[in-house]
Image (cartoon, rainbow, N blue to C red; front, side, top):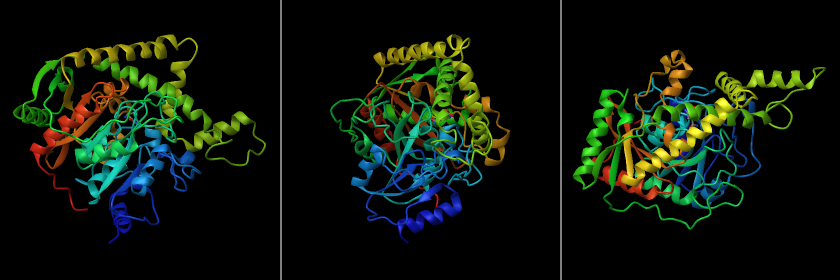
Length: 435
Ligand code: GLN
């Protein structure tokens, strides 16, 4: 069976693709792309009905680089524009390969799913605003690496919140992620926030480092998950890594600040989808423009997108802006300082990736939006700070994968990669489920 045939078979079972390539030139190294990454001639709908027919006439910078290194197999399901933690806020909901009744995590759910399901030399290119690579990596039992903001070009990424969005990678191994990052990282003059620096080497090497354990990151975490994460820390200790407890006292405030900033930016980014130049449109008839825009947006945005447009617009409104948006921006600076202080004492921080196991798909409708936002509490702060992180599988609870989250200072990808690599070597291989 060819890889493309295999992808079609997996999609029938797990519902994880939004588009599959007709054919590929070589099967040596294949890439899947989160739907929000513009790919010439392939649907790039960002999981949204409002642009579900959008076929870009250009490639995102990362896609140009990927085409030189291997072949693209297809586009992967995600929450609409990245708005979600369980990959349920969209029209095609992927199923977890470890238990098809459960969520893959979000928003890059399809990317996590295919990485666990496809037995090939495959790297998934995904995106994280507040944890959308770490969460599905943890729920699907794969490695997920989110780089420093600005290390990978965002040119051609359909934006969620521009000051937070980062393109990153998922693979079955730490080396796979390092290789993926190596291919896509680098300065790009087409992205004004791209960092202009010399190319680094991300390939993992043996290294012993100092680990900090943020005590706030173990509160309200499932006990079985806590235990597996501690077991992993002990394994690192046996390899010569030292650890000590540290405090990140602004963890809860980081979550509130993130959601205000992310929604404020999302509400402006989504303004362009009004039925004129981008996405869904129809004959205006005898409606005035306001009525027409409102009709198009009401019919084509999902519930969560609408909630975020309303909340984000409110946070930026005269009279509320100082109290909400600007205050959130100040908290963001304090969160960065909080991390910087911790990184004066340690090289890497280690904590659980998610506080819970992958929830059942049938239970998702009953999860209140606020509860969903709260489940991001461990992944959001490091994303808000624009610092790199990697989730690595560290065991199973009732056959459901659990991830340990390793977080580093700005541009210290190598340190989290080396720590993840040291742990992975000792942990041994994972046997992925047969789909
Ligand atoms: N769950 C978070 C949110 O809904 C993160 C999503 C993401 O990183 N794209 O904003």
